[in-house]
Image (cartoon, rainbow, N blue to C red; front, side, top):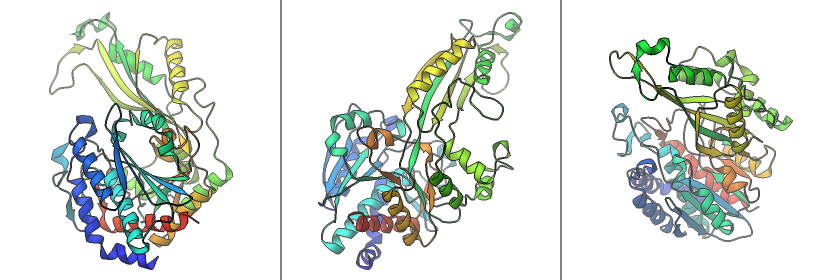
Amino acid sequence: MEDILQIIEDRKEIYLEWLVRLCRQPSIAAQNVGMAETAKLTEEILQGIGVETRQIPTSGYPVVYGEVGSGEKTLAFYDHYDVQPPEPLELWESDPFAADIRDGTLYARGVADNKGNIIARAAAVDAYMRARGELPERVKFIIEGEEEIGSLHLEEFVSQNQDLVQADACIWEAGYTDPQGRPSVYLGVKGMLYVELTARQANVDLHSSWGTVVPNAAWYLLQALQSLRDAEGRVLIPGFYDRVKAPSESDLEALRQMRFDEESYRRQFGLTAFKNGLTGLNLVKEHIFQPTCTICGLWSGYTGQGTKTVLPHEAKAKIDFRLVPDQGPAEILESLKKHLVDGGFGDIQIDLLGPEHPARTPTNHPFAKLVAETAQEVYGKEQVVYPIMAGTGPMYVLCEQFGTIPTASIGVGNSNSRNHAPNENIHIADFYRGIAHVATILDRFAD
């Protein structure tokens, strides 16, 4: 690997320039800002390292697809070129699309999620081919433009291009170092059911004096929400836990070896304790292997400055259920509907905003071991293997829907990368280590 690592060292300023260029191009899918320009720029960067690319249209934004190399095995990279909106702008210390570098850290919207990983993987391919002349396997780049808005048309792309997405393994979009600087390897994602609930009572907001005899939509919705889970956070929808798989012994061993730095995370979040006083192995097991029911937003009536004595006729809440294997979003949605009807809340409107299946690769899979072992070699620190990421992504759609593709998620972020928040960032040193890690995987995967 010395020849490849030397190329990375010699070209590190060029690779950083690629990253800065991509981060300075806005690509906000939710607002249709810069999407066509970013797809074109992503394609140009890949073409510059010898990748044969094309933009494959969908009913939404196109997928940038590319292939390079040959060999008996195929390794896919899944990434996305869209980013979250940068608001609130006033909380950024520099322009979110300036790609400002301060004290060895690059600040930009999308640099951790997910443009840093796009460039790290392109740079690894570039360095490998410059050092060795060719790759030992075929590599596929699958870079969508809608991950931050729910991958709305990825299933359409996959269904229409099943031959293009087939691979022997896949490197997923994201990864981070923990507070101790140890690299994380994620072997799956939770699923999601995202819904919006709307409660209506009167046909117009009323003077609050009518609260004596007119039902209040806000109170009504709160009562319905309270029926969904108990004080400890356990979901009360009948059958919700029926398909939840218990962690295997190899899963539990991975958790024991994780040495989760709960104190650092607790300090970072400003907490005196985690929910229900959880700590140690029980804390990590709950975080990784249990589903959730979370109120993401709640609004009704008057929320402006000062007072307005009003009785709300309408109340809304956005809720996400994070799902674990083998829970399915369609089944959970039907259970939610029945639960509300049975509880006397059948007139509450339910709008489906985003379904996503969970997916995972076993911790003892050879590809999982390869990614973990090479991470430890490159970073010089013990890797942290997460059997499932606490977050969600379209891994099922791409890697399990039409045949299981073993998948591991790694990347160039850090424990305080602030994805989706102001001052999103990566450390430049992590960017270069991420390139070296991918290059090492490329070298070992064919064997």
